[in-house]
Length: 166
Image 1 (cartoon, rainbow, N blue to C red):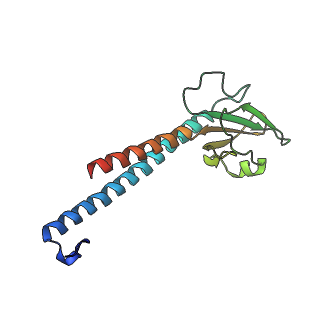
Image 2 (cartoon, one colour):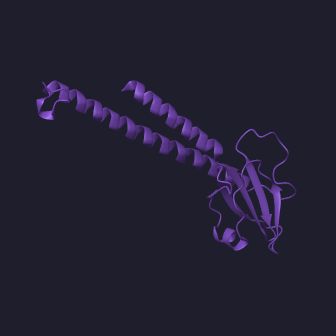
Image 3 (cartoon, rainbow, N blue to C red):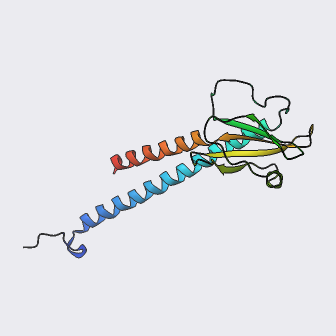
């Protein structure tokens, strides 16, 4: 008498069919979950880009962001003066992205870009905008920490639900 699992050829057609259907369902769930998470991340980063573009049209006088309770993503802003000095206008409370050279920031144009915080805690979405009043460049940014937390939570939820379904 053999105690191990039976070879594939000895399985009934019904057992093979059930196994194949379960395997295909598992693959379909994994593909759907991965696609959903990627689409969610893309959508959330797109919204942050819209917010950055909206913020970049504000005047640059004084503090860039008024003192306010943090109700959304953490923000930061700094300005490059024409002589190359950097003025921090709104310090972030969490890990900050590295400060790049003025030439590198200017070369990025007006498109949002992503930088990782120097301490590795989170990514930041930034946009560089020419400051017409001073001839310098203003950089504003939003933390992607909440976006990453949302996507990570969705991934955990999807994994748990998928395990229950299967």
